[in-house]
Amino acid sequence: MKIICVGMNYASHNKELHHTLITREPTIFMKADTSLLKDGKPFYIPDFSSDVQYEAEVVVRISRLGKSIARRFAHRYFDEITVGIDMTARDLQHKFREAGLPWELCKSFDNSAITGNFVSLENLNEDINRLPFRLDINGKTVQEGNTSDMLFKIDEIIEYVSRFMTLKMGDLIYTGTPAGIGNVKIDDHLQGYIGENKLLDCYIK
Image 1 (cartoon, rainbow, N blue to C red):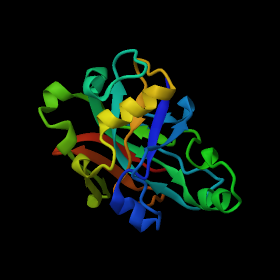
Image 2: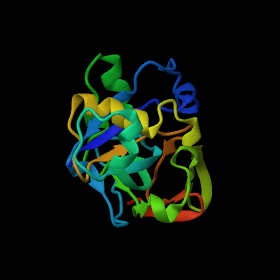
Image 3: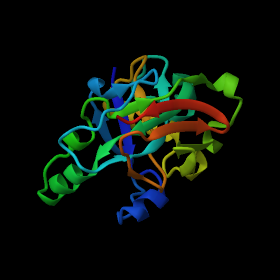
């Protein structure tokens, strides 16, 4: 099982991090399978970072084997989605970037890929390219996004990634985060929604 992530896929998030907008190709990075945290289990803040930040995203789960998938067929390769959180050790990311080093360790540490409960697109009955989603912390909305604002849509991401690697059943794609990222602290209560469907519920320890 692979966890494939798209960086800088919302212009609003790029601006808040002072990144130049990337429009030619998706920015792809990976998380280890040990990053996965599901079933409402708590997230424990690691001792190697003092600046762990949440990034709420729509996550799709690949439902069939595919390689070099044409965009027009990409919708056949996933049928479930959820809300996920890409936890990032931001202080480590800044350190690695300044040194010109790879920064997998700040993104791919254990339990850094939180996923909510998956729901079938058929039951959701929504346009995948116009999905509103949000993250609440302690009852207050801290991030709101809509898949219509993605720089690269889900079908484009699947087409692009499958040129380089075979997608397998169960692979996850984190599709990028909008503006509103921030720190987590002990006892925070995170709840993620697609529309009014609460799919993610997690405490920080």
